[in-house]
Image (cartoon, rainbow, N blue to C red; front, top):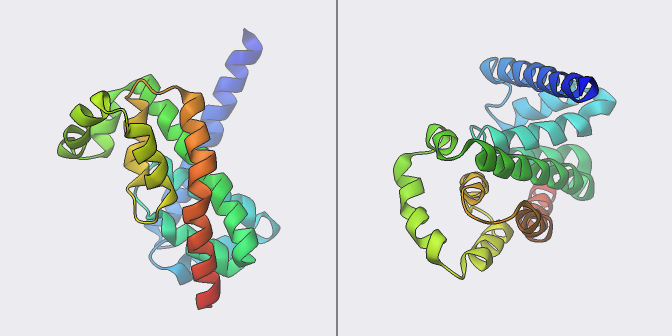
Length: 187
């Protein structure tokens, strides 16, 4: 049990550290534009891809930044293929974490992160709908879908984590690939 407790404390400390670093960068204006975010990521040198992966995961968990901003930075800094992989890994990890957080902490957490009317709009339908899984998969594959909200929202449903992870792993790459190719071509 001691090992499990030490691991939990270590993970919490790491998350706090990452949150503080990213919070400071946010307050310092590092995320105001693609250019400022590029400079911030470049500052990590060889650890830039890891920084982008963590940033993309955190932007899903703490939905303050639009995900396409990180996709643009990834494509510009690392090319369409490298940017795609950094963004895909980070966004997928963040999406699954958001789902698990909602499963564990419930509606109170979701209401703190998103407007209550947004939750109420979908809650009645999703609970009864047989097409929610197809809707979620299609939404994850398409750009401009409110992914962050639906990651948390799906955690409030009866959906199992394995099914949600499969939807993310199979549906999310298409949207990220479209962003990566578009942003890499724009440069």
